[in-house]
Length: 290
Image (tube, rainbow, N blue to C red; front, side, top):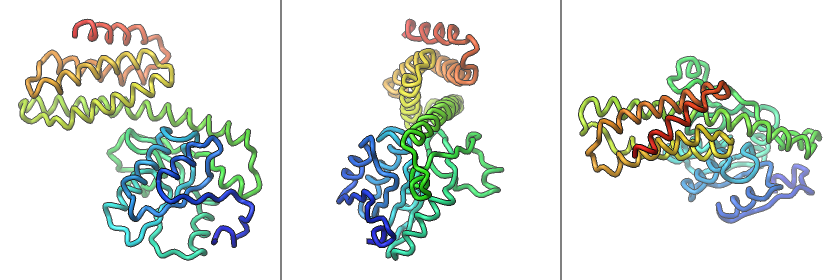
């Protein structure tokens, strides 16, 4: 009603009763420019859908504007929605004027995005946090905003598609770099824990490393980075062997873990300089020695 009264009578406004409806709408090639979603009773499911959108795993536009609404939002819910990459979280009850104000802010002052190993979405850090952050170094990304273009009468379907494709390519490159960094970081944590004694090596670290390596492998495949994909396959094989060992870790696997994680990071950093042959040799050696 608020959108209609604001003059959007001819807009394609679609209502859905659950997150499955939202996911279906987003999956459409001509998906929405903005999602306004009550997440009060479906925070987990909503956060999963929002994250899939942002990580380019659902739909064709990872940069859709997202406003989440919640009645009496408690901290766990807030954390889930914020970490999912939603643009805004608004506490209900809300007035039509407030909704329009938030839409106005996305049209005229949307935050740039950041891409890390586990987060894609608006940069919510303050100045001191940016300067002192211990997370991997990140670049800000100005993302396409079809909502803004339509609101300002500047929408060009072909142009916005080119902008989305270009930003998505940059996003994927950054994601590969961040995940490669995270793989190396996790492998270091595993090595440090093992150095204290096998009992200090928590299985959850290995599962996290396996998950991140799988994600990186899929992105490498999509990007046509065959040497990186091979390294990830070899690394995943070593990690899985360690998981299946039931805590009886072999020094050989710890050494391979360090070498492969270093090779993964080096391959991403030196992409295109002729190092692919070295990466291929390393991965094939590991696979052959399994």
